[in-house]
Image 1 (cartoon, one colour):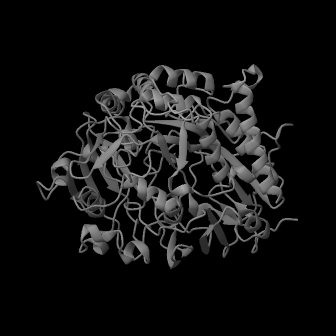
Image 2 (cartoon, rainbow, N blue to C red; image 1 turned 180 degrees about the vertical axis):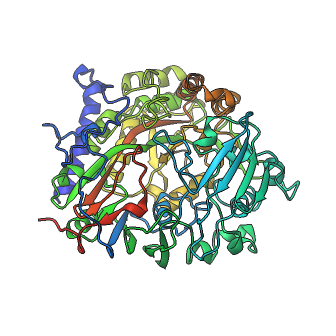
Image 3 (cartoon, rainbow, N blue to C red; image 1 turned 90 degrees about the vertical axis):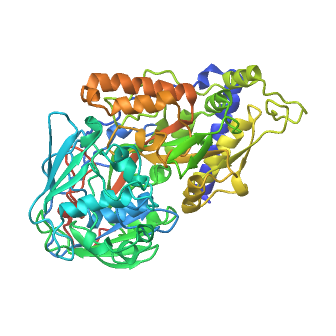
Length: 611
């Protein structure tokens, strides 16, 4: 009851803030002091305390665990994935779409490239790269001793094969997009006009050469697909059947530090040490990865049921920040939450977004008013104790060199929201307290939002009531929150039942936003683009963008374009909080430390339990 009451109180506090601001109380105006870079690592080595108002600041957290003991030779570790839904079970980098599946894959497979603190590919991983003077021809060479778990070497043919699968007309994953279409000959292959990709050449067993239409900085921060696919396993399969095969679902392999021993569908995966790992002997003998619900994660951590989790729910951190058997690490997350608007559909035949000028949310004035109506500073403080904070532009502070905190974006102002709607012609024709559309017809906006965690329901209701306060009738799709997998299935299918949705996006380590905003990306869930959008995205990944200042200018323009058009608006920038059991060594969130999972170890045979 205590926690339930807390979140009802949080909801009331936020609503009181909204009501006070509507009454012109200037003391409740939203502040912008949380905008900007929050990546400093203080390395305090102690769990962080909140200020007197119960608000935390991500700058105060250490990013690296301080336990410095010697790792046991035969240690085992349990890693928790905090999720209120089961694993989808798509355990392959070339096919997965859900973040929980990634958390499993990362223990047994890895990209062929390592990355530096700026997320650029180095020469230290399983492969090296060279580029010619044009910036478009890359020669990629896999190092000796890099083998699949079944003993077969990872080859250039495997790397090329991944491109052929993702580019195939029958591929049903979400990876195909602008980066792949940049490969010479890929669009023709994807259209079924040829059986080969002219820009891909296998030079020898270990060497692959790829020619791109355009070079640029994104090529070495994610533009080169860094994941191979074992052709000796998948080569005889139909592409459309690969995702559901046992090689993905039941017996996945990689060349990473641990080998999948068993899979309990939807629940857990047990892995054992890969004695043939190319970097050297992994520190742990056994790793168990399991799903932990947000309702039980605290108990699992306190009892040693898990040694660490992928991310601790920030809405539970205040009550548990003094947990005695873990060290809480923190960093700015490569992710944000947002409100998206359904503005068109995805045409699978053409591979393009088709914008619908008659979509219910097509009027940018309506979208802008909805942005002004929500107080994300209050949401960040009251729901997340400052560990999420008001978001402004769609290039996030995780990329401090490109995030432009100076761009003026809608910030909580219900009076301005009402003014915009009044001037645009949204009137309450029938006197029921809700505005009709521009034709004087009933306007009901259907809102899709995900279940999960204690804040999911009150947060969705806060947004609904904030929009109601400016005269907009917003209702949950199906009258309830949607389960994670169902939510994204409906987005991908352009389900006509929703008009807006609350989503979250992990950006990865490449600042280039084309993967989710380009007109040829199936992950462009708002289904919006225009000529300027595609042009700026192309310029931001061009050879000219090798000049950081030029690239910053391009992304400044793109950020402003998205503020002007609002196919979606960011709500909260996020921190990632990771509790690490006091027996765990060599764990870090610091990008400059380049975490290698084979180095993570434990200093005691059993997990330390809370006092």
